Length: 232
Image 1 (tube, rainbow, N blue to C red):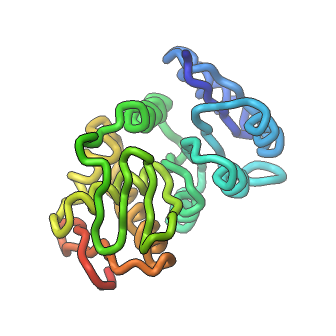
Image 2: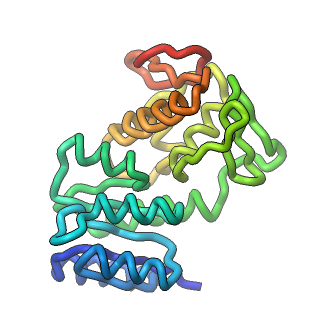
């Protein structure tokens, strides 16, 4: 069954370009020029991913992302002419799975989408070990769930994958490049900044749940899971 994609962008040229590339790849596409219409369609029709622009008349893309994330964990990619760090971080904190700055290559968008679907569909986890724990954080692979100090915790798909990697490999240091390969895939095109953004989000959530687990910075290299609350 073809995966269904919702595109939300007030520029018809952008919508048509994305639609052409996605339909060529075999995806089923619905596109909307405003957030309110897209949200209504999302509530009434199941979809597998949304590609959302930030700057739109009326409700903006970040607010749409927030509303959708309150209802579902469906993958979201934000595309925007706004490439300021605060916008990128805010989009990721609101639950988007990726952020692509305009102008962008439609081929790059397709690759990023495929990588997200590959991780979701393939499930790159050793199923022989169903529960991983470290410093009060428990990741249950079978139920695809996380608890922190016995409290159920909410994490996006990428957050979950990175957290599972750290919890199942405590005290092991991973370089940013290794994390890009593990979480985004070898076909990822771009720099390593998304790793830092993802780590910041996970740290913030772990602290909000009172966790003793910390993702520590290994200066000049990457990150590792440790105990305590060392700051980056």
